[in-house]
Amino acid sequence: MDEKGYTITPMAFLLLIPVIIFAVAFGDIVNEINQYSTITIGSDVTGGTVSSIYSSISAGAGDSGRYAAYMATRETIDRQNFLPNSKETIRNIATNQLNAHVIDACRKLSIETGRDIYINNVLIPANSTNQTFNTTFTTDDITVEQVDGYGNTDPYGFYVVVRAGVPIKVVQSGQVFEGTLPEIRGYAPIQGLEDPYIWIKSKFRTRNAIYQYPYFEESNYLGMVDYHFNDSVVINDLSIQNLQYCLNGTDNPENYAPMSYYFPNPNGLNFFERLQGGKINGEPAGSRLSTFVIGDPLSDVYKGATISKIDVDYYKSPPVSGTNIILGTGSNARPFRDPTGSIFYLSSNYKTLFGLKDSYSNDYP
Image (cartoon, rainbow, N blue to C red; front, side):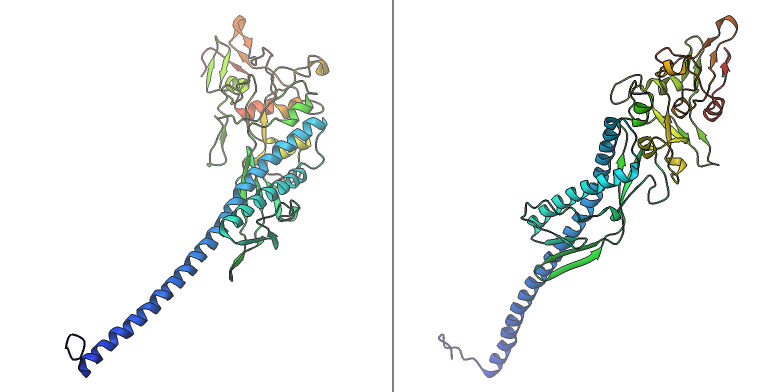
């Protein structure tokens, strides 16, 4: 009998037992759920840390490549001489810069997440000012090339490639993630950088920054290309568009004109070759580009010779001769000139490649 006069029969007592058992069991379930939630959240943080490391390496690879390209360009121009091995120079600079970027990012991640981070079996300490951890990546882990992961080439940039298989480990309170990195490619654009080839070959008399000519068109059909240099010819104005546009470098971001744009040219020089002063064996033709020489910076050397104004002709030793392009007929015939007023000469090979004629009459096209 309870304090209110009710009697708890044996049957009623039996009915209460499952409730009590269930309550105890429910408490255990809650505890297990809390423990599982803690594990799940911890795993999520660890997984997120790994993802952040991957993103940091990917972004850092591209940034380090751009930095290395700039530094290699400056070194070439400041030395007043071409580099003996441009790809090795860029790889060394990019590796050091990538290490600095990734170490800084991983230290911050380690502080934020409480995880110990290892890359390439090197612990990156969270609370250390030690700056000697520069062997996270070695030059053996890094390559530089102008081909993407699908075999496509890009003359206006290159890739810093971190090899697949670099060990990575993230540790916290008994939770360990161990694995290896996939191949990581970071894109480094070269647009806007000074062209050391033009600078040195013209004996420091002229300069040019690399910007992309926008009208070049490559068709997938039989590998056809169209430079669109003579889409419009105005005889009275002695104008050939878009050749004039390309020569003038109109609308380039530096607002510095004339400064000819760069266009793909399988017989030109890619960025690494421009740092080195000549062709490098094994470089893909699709990575190469050219520009036109504005004016006649070596006129005192060539002594009035009619030299083809594409860079690889003009600076070749000996240079390649060219002929002018005549606009109009009869007494009204005039040679086409570049924005500085110099007569524009071009070799027959490049006239053919670019689809340019020796002369244009009043009825063109």
